[in-house]
Length: 544
Image (tube, rainbow, N blue to C red; front, side, top):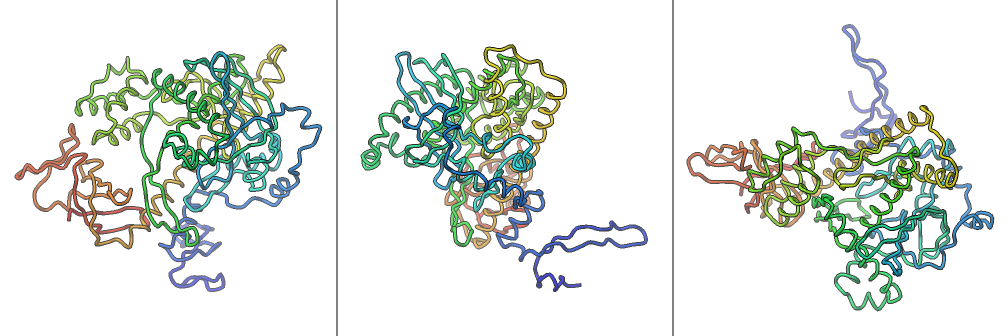
C-alpha cells in the first residue's frame, strides 16, 4: 500500500502516523497519518524526525504570541523610576557570531581594593510573569534547543531576540549582580538590583580574542574606547580563574565539532573543532562569579531556591576511573579521600598527551549529571559549595525562577524571613525535576542533529582516504579522529584481517597475536571511509 496521496505524499516520502489501535490477536494495528515529511536522508526531513521523536514544540500557541506582542519597546517613566540607571555605564555584550539572544552584559571597573564587576542579565521576569500564557509555555519547554541551522527558542522571538535581548544602543531592562573583588579575586561584597542599561557595543568572542590576546592593531584602533575596560576585565578574569582552579574546579577540555553551514542550503560545508578561547573563558568566569554570588545570598538567608547541583560521584565509578588513570601512569588518592582538586590536577597533567581525550571522556562518565534541585548539595565539578543558574533566563526556565526568587528575597531584606510551607518547597522540587528532564531531552536532540550533519557531510566521501589519529580503543575496534575534518568513525575489529587482535583492557590497546602490532591511543593511521549510516548517525572506516 503506497503513501496517502490526499496528503500530498509521494514515493519515498516519510509519513508521521498516530497509532489509533494497537494490534491484538484478531485485529491488525491501525493508525492515522497526521503529517507527511520529505525523503529520508534529506537534512530537513531528518531534523524534523528528531524534533518529533523528542516531542519538541516548534510553534507557539496564538495566546502566547499575542501576549509577547503586547509589550512596547519604550520603557515607561514609572518603570524607570523604580530602577538603577546604568545607561551611562560602558556595559558590553560578548557572544558568538551567530547569537541573537544576548542575555548578559559585563563591565569591570578598577576600585581602590581591586575590581568591581557588573553582570547585567536580561530581566525576563518583567515580561514573563507567573502563571501567564508566556510563563506556562516557557515552563513546558524549559529550555531553548540549539541546532546548527536553527534554534527552537523557549520564548517567542519578540522577546528572545528583541525586547529581552541586550542589543546595543537600546534601553533594556536588566537584573544586575554587582560584585567587588580584591586583587586576589576574593569576593568582598555583592548586591543585586533591577536596572536599565544601554549596551555600548555588541562584541564577538573572535573579535575580543583578536583584540586582547592576539593584539590585532586594526581592531584595537577600531574599538579604542573599549580597550581600557577590556584590559581591566582580563586582569580580573585571570585572578578569578586562577583562584577557581586552585580550589579544584575541574576544567574539562572536550572540544565539540562545529558545523560550518551553507546557510541557504542548510547543509554542512565543513566540520571543524569548536574553539574555546580566552574570550570564551572570560565570559564563563564572570557568569560563574554571578551564579555563585546569587546562590550564596539565597543560601545564607535560608530562602526558597533552585540550585544547580552536581553531587559527589559514585565510589564504584571513581574506582574504575582510578584504575584507568593508574594504567596510564597517573596516581590518584584512595576514593574515600578523593576530592575535586585531585581530579582537576589529573586533567591538567594529561593536557596535550595522546590519551587526554580518553581521560576527559572517562572522567566525565564517572561523574554524576548536574541537575536542578531545591536543596543545596554543592557543585562537585566546579568545587563550589553553593551554585545556581542566574545568567541565561532567555533560554533557561530555572534562571527565570531564580530571578523571581531573588527579587522576592530582596523585598524581604531588613524584615523577618518568612517560613516556607511544605507546598512551596514541593512546587520548587517539581519545577527543578521537570527542568532537569527537559534539559536532558534538549541535549540528546542537539547531539543527534549534530551527528546527523556529520553523517550527511561524510556521505559523499565514501571510498575516500584520510589521515587520522586513534582517539579511543575498545574491545570491538578503535575510533579514529580525522585530521582534515573534526569527524570520528569506527574501525571495527572484524575489519582487521591481517592478524588476530586482543584487547588489552588495562592499556586501552589492541595487540596482534602473531605480529605484535599495536593500535593505541594517539597512533596515526590512514583510513578509508567505507560506510555512512545516516539513520543511525554512524561512520565506518577501514584501514587503507
